[in-house]
Length: 118
Image 1 (tube, rainbow, N blue to C red):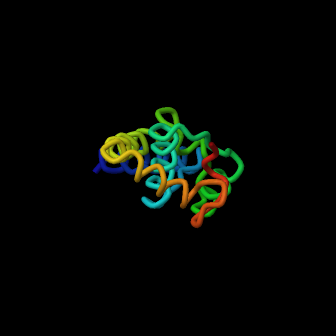
Image 2: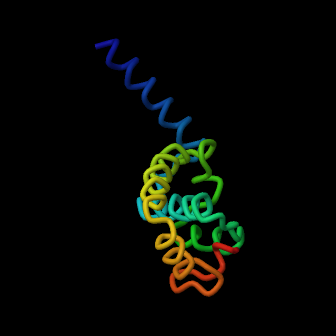
């Protein structure tokens, strides 16, 4: 009986410490995909990322740019994996992909304007 009590006390102590550090849920997958898409477009097409519009877009998902910045952010490794896959796919038909991205996230984009700048 004694080891069970000690394990319960250790678990309660660990949970209390984790709560004090502010554990948060992972961002929605759509937020990670969006960040990776923007990073891939900047990489493949040579766009610059408009920081304020990009942060506003991520804010819709309750995510900050520090959360998704590869590889340092807490979810950066996941974003980097998605980024690699998207970059490879975009490179296969670069001209079409860059036109599509500009229409969605360019200066007058249909999804979120001003995120990608020439």
